[in-house]
Length: 405
Image 1: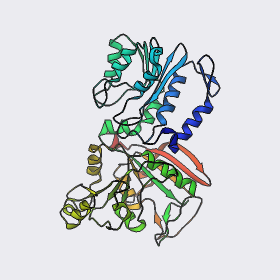
Image 2 (image 1 turned 45 degrees about the horizontal axis):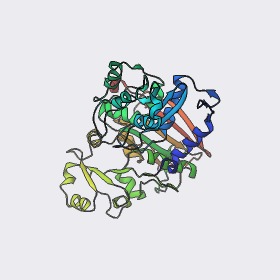
Image 3 (image 1 turned 60 degrees about the horizontal axis):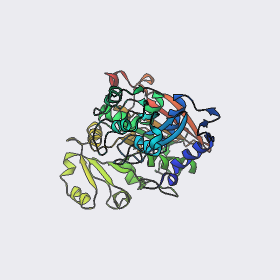
């Protein structure tokens, strides 16, 4: 695991923090020119610490914590990696005796159970902390209010739901997985203005500019797994890895391949760089090809008895394997199928100022085709960024009536 300061997406966060935090001789702090004296101010700092760990905590949530005593910052920490100390422990260790009588701000409810590490509630109680401020309540059934209750029963003052929306958004994949058992699915696409991803010959290099493509590698570093359909593997032979100048984490590579048509020479079959998992059908699992893939170290996942991979069953199985976040970089077929079955929670669309045209040019979203414009999938909570001349639009899929039932 690289130090945080060597992680590209973390480095910018720490630079922002250094510019926005000015230490005074008294130990008090200013954030972006505002004296940090409110619960919201200190929770923002805890969020900054948590955000710096994006992509490196595995199936655990990202959590930040700060300890304040007499208006002074005396400890701070973040959960760095699954199986290691939680954010509260790091912050309390830094604070030492100065934690006694103070307040700890934590973005997610402290755990109250023995997992790979001891309960954070007990660590808090041992230090003499008098007040705990929590951002989000943990949806995990092993916690889910029990951590807060334990602290209150011990006589500590507990304040909840401070910057709750921001704290929930930080761990949207963790929350989704704990509530549904399924990975949080983000559909990433790069298109021309007219929605094309490749010419009629299949040529797609490059739709977007280099800055946008660098951002895509940041996304790969942040997600646990990346998914494409077999047709993308055959047409583009992608590596599906994260490529930074310094460091970076490779996601698990997942191929949807109902008939095991993935070439044995494909780059994704080389598991020396990153693990590869092929989702296929019951019939294909019995073929000779299945044994050959497994001999190369590729994991096969049986997803249905039909002719095509059952996408719902696939997501259930991936969720059981502890995959919380899934970045889809597929072609029109897999993109269209996932959207039509309401399997996508979030869309990130990179749009290049180009017009390709042509009926035979490949589109980002394939069949099925809705009969009415009223049947179009809508996004809300929209945000956008600009990368050079490219525009990146991010939004969340609005649930339909059937989704809500």
